[in-house]
Amino acid sequence: MRPILWGTIWFVIGLIGWVVFSIFAALSSFGGHQSILMMVLMYIFGIVFFFSLPVAVIAEIILWIRRRQKNTPY
Image (cartoon, rainbow, N blue to C red; front, top):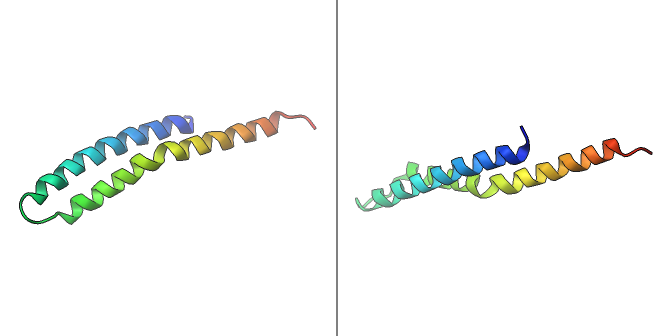
């Protein structure tokens, strides 16, 4: 599969996980204590959400350059 497709899949997974664990972290803070596990999971999914597409685009550009150099006769 192409890197952009994998990037899109990870983007959606990160988005859903970030929203879900953000809600859980907010609801757990109503009890008077903040759940460390919810905060860690929220940040992990947020990082996946934020960086998945830019990394996939960079990988696509690198593959495009390699393919172009491979097909260029010297």
